[in-house]
Amino acid sequence: MQPQRIGVVVALAAEARILFSGKLRYQAVIDIQPQFCMVVSGMGPVRADQAAEQLLQAGVDRLLSWGTAGGLNPAGRAGDLLVPEHIFWAGRSWPADSDWRSTLLQQFSGKVLAGGLCSVSEACASVAAKAQLRADYPEAQAVDMESGAVAQRAAQAGIPFLAIRSVVDPAHQSLPATATHSVDCYGRPQVMPLLRGLLRHPGDLPPLMGLGRQMQAAVHTLRLVQPRLIQSHLQEANSV
Image (cartoon, rainbow, N blue to C red; front, side):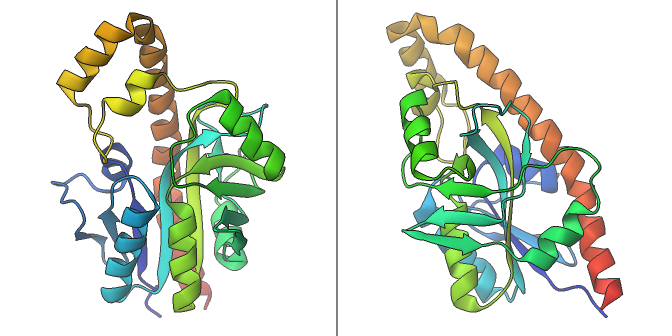
């Protein structure tokens, strides 16, 4: 039996390049492999919702939210892998598909965080904001801006949903202002805003460099996941 087709919603260009080495097109369906396609949506729930709808129109059988996240668990570190059991979004808890999640986790021998993932509409950039989310949702391990919208679309379509996220900035770390104002919606650096930000906040340079190293750790984790994601999907299809 042919595996079902997975549609992947990816916010950032750096996250998308883990799955696809060709020329990226934004807000368009890109075929990765016969059973995988993706849309690079840009950041935020509105763009993620639009991308999920594009994938549904393309005939996918499953939706996957893929990428990085901010940490909420005080014990977490950059590069931690989270495959959440549910997503907190829009006043509800949206479940991940338990069978799909279980099949994927069988491919891993290392630590994978469970629990919840919070989805928000605005970047959760400060330690205080992360702590408040953790207090409101004690099961939440991390926060992003896309998974909730994708989970909601999957539920409305009656198809399986899963999220795979790797932590960049841990719970104890605030993002410097320059970091959030010097990239476009796809996470691509914008030189002039970056230079202006550093002129106003020269002290942001060391944490920005550290954030770059943490992004590399998160991307490295996702690169390890990528072949296991494909293998688990084929394994599931062969077992049907």
